[in-house]
Length: 215
Image (tube, rainbow, N blue to C red):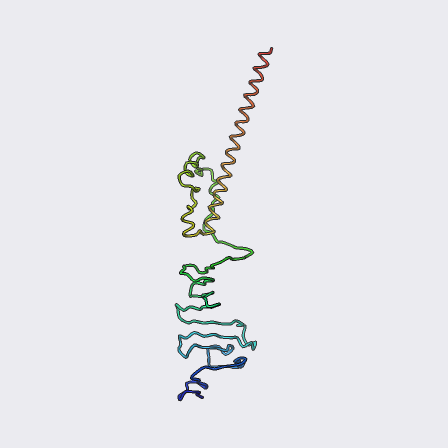
């Protein structure tokens, strides 16, 4: 049946807008679309048109989701709130917040609150405790700090501000610096023990000399 059209292409073909007070409801029955368990809203009859599929809830399938489908390989699904794009899904990318060009699978322009974050890393730095690890001498480290204004292996401030920093790499580098600091501390402790022994020996010699003079 056609409304406002002479040659309808579907059972109901309307050339214009449809105003509904409450809802459009799909029957729990087989249909001609891709999945009979969903009520489907399609952009057009074109095979590349986008569609929204609502589960009918008849218990005949374990698919209980709402589907928003853009079939094109470079298709985009956008969610608009307050006249702005707040959420975008692309083929290999999900963006929350302000939309910018990005190479990340998930980009959030704002804060994230979570109880736990697990980061996969490709290397760790326990090699610092190997016997022949080349620990930089403290005087050489001081010269490096004066010239570069940052610790060895860590990126400079300008680079971090421009490009950000990868958390797994940062944690590995910070662990490396903590392990190196531990080695420096152990080395300093050994030197202190030696100095104390020297002082004690010198004091003993002084005491012996005093005793000899007094005698």
